[in-house]
Image 1 (tube, one colour):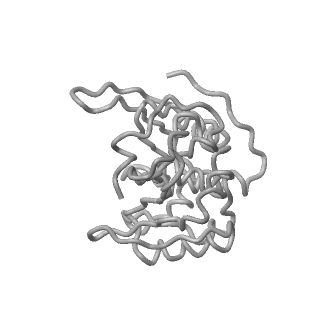
Image 2 (cartoon, rainbow, N blue to C red):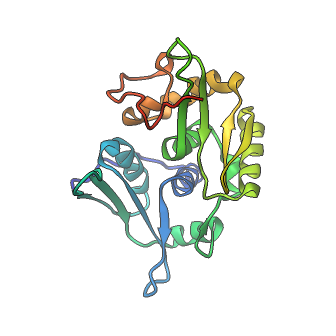
Length: 228
């Protein structure tokens, strides 16, 4: 597929922050046995191409990138695959985020946590859950970060950083053998106000309607809405 215009980022710390949160979200760093350095790879459904292009525009500050389109048969949705060349920069991030094959979080990069980086995590692993028993479309909203690959300890560190840096209070909840974060109800509106401006169009369905920056064509459907 065609390339995208690079989002020019001259601040190395800012670039490191954005790429790190992309990796801690849906992206991944992979090292082949025949190469000492890692590459960035991310697979995502094609309807979220704007987010893929956003990530591509950031990564293009570091190296060349390509986006591949693949058509799936049956009920599976078409996919996009974003891939870069190998780079020592990615290898250093791999050493900080991964423990063997376990992808955790980078405690150091949590010092740079801001609304944009939280938006990256939310687009990748977040949900807006509505209690369907309420009448108003914007009442009874719960916000979760479903990073269920993370251990309780990792989520505790992330929860603390979200409180220290953004003054958001999250609870660690358990579902079967997994843990996830749920935002306290009184913080939902301030979360939506600040995160919405960094959320791409295709993910605006995760934003309360009165905070959406653009009109989303997606509806809050059965995957998002459930009875509490």
